[in-house]
Length: 168
Image 1 (cartoon, rainbow, N blue to C red):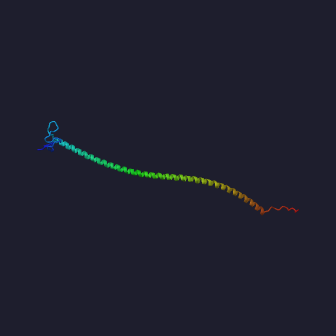
Image 2 (cartoon, rainbow, N blue to C red; image 1 turned 60 degrees about the vertical axis):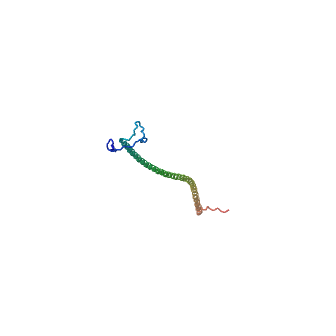
Image 3 (cartoon, rainbow, N blue to C red; image 1 turned 90 degrees about the horizontal axis):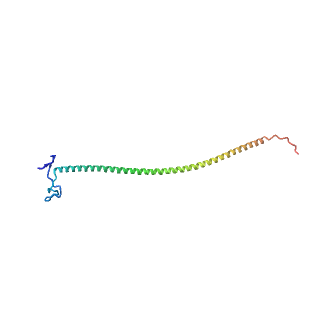
């Protein structure tokens, strides 16, 4: 009849020797010389230890799978971030190039404005000189017209004839 464990819950059968060197006809390495057998208590504890090890292994595998999934998410997010960074860098470079072009155009426009301002100032001076000459010409014309009017007046109204002198 099988024996039971200390708790009395499961029957225990005789187990083969745990030491591989303990074969029939050979002596065990222990000092007593008897073949050592695993007791039911040892087997129950070994089963508990094995179950605990399996549970621990399952938990470690679960944590490993979760960690790998998290790592995969992080790698994916990193790839997306790198793509976004490349896009932003390209946009920044395009913006910088556009800004440089606008600055060059602004510099060119300022140069053209300076040239046009100088030209306008020169033309204004020329126009002022022409205005002065025109005013002088108008004054001369007015003086000439006054003289002409005086001469016409004299021609139209000759001065009274002075008594004529006898001819000599």
